[in-house]
Image 1 (cartoon, one colour):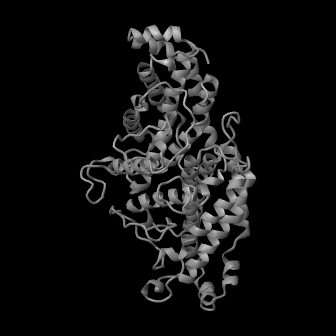
Image 2 (tube, rainbow over the protein chains, first blue to last red; image 1 turned 90 degrees about the vertical axis):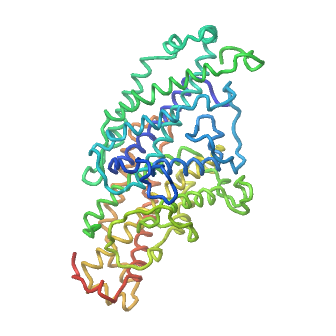
Image 3 (tube, each protein chain N blue to C red; image 1 turned 135 degrees about the horizontal axis):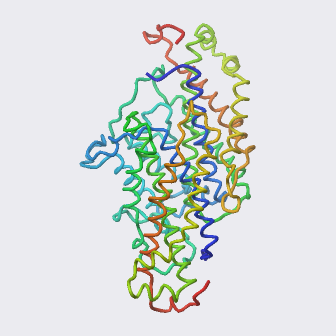
Length: 258
Length: 258
């Protein structure tokens, strides 16, 4: 059984930060390359109006679908018409109480927000270094790391909070009081701690970078990504989870606190 | 034109070190999971005697082939029956003097060496945490980063060294004196510097890791990978490049020193 201990969930989220930072640094080694995101400029035969980025995301998700990635709750795809898994994967029992994980899927918002953020990450401006293939390859890896963090937080933090304060959440959900629920799930001191820790990590992992051979990224840029995209979308996912959580049936009659 | 300045080539190789280290750290978050490498245990329908690792590498290379990755000299695939690129990619003119880049391809040795090294990286021993899909996904990313470093070094360092000492190399090559060429391309002081720098980086990039939430890797393990696999295979690739370099024709009549 996967844990619903809020401290262990927070620890897992913390452990995902390095991967996000590493992948952003890898992407930042290339220019922003706007043509790689322009519809119809992929250079692919028969790709119609898709961009090279669109195609890379599609290919990656088709491959990952074959490997059963999207059976994992926190791995949510951008596409909804992916081929079925070719692999039988063993998954641990989930403590989540939701019938369709994709009710929580905020991948479209992650992709949109990431692409808006990209010019700040590749801070040489709207440059083109010709490395379009490498750029979109690293984009997709970065987006997957961000999406894993957002959806893991959305699902498990929401279920954990709900179970520890069922009497608080149940009436708010019944009344559809989105605003008050958002206020209740928001913990400003935790958000502050995450932002401080992430921006410190950005500097630490780059402490020995030889800037003559490798581009450095700005802690403020990553801090902005967490503040404006990752944290708000995690909370949006939490709200979606709570509003789509099973409220009747035997599964809800269990003890309220884990 | 891509540079043949040995200092700039060395700088590029240095810039690839962080990516290798980051990907090894990402892989080390999972157990060694030996079943993911056992033939016939992939869980894939119709996969015959392949392992999950074999399949992931195959899928990844098929996708990358479609995106024209293997038109880039230093990107050498493991498979030789990949589909043709679906994309028209613009590549810079190459200063390399070899007809078939795959004469230098040491990917099979890289994969074999990496898999032997894996239990030391995932130092919890021959454990199984059930995360086979994530394990092989990160394996393939790590192998690609290592292979890029090895082949970039093999190709460009060898051409650069050849051009700067054509009178030295040409007779040794004509005589097939492999041993003496190996001695000539070996620079122990450069190797020592790389090993020292890489092992320092392993500690620096992990300086803020909270070991309660994320597994740390040992600098000695990465040092061993560089000393026993990456550096020797780069030199093996250099030898292959030199022995397959074009020796006649107009392309060889250019000035000897860059």
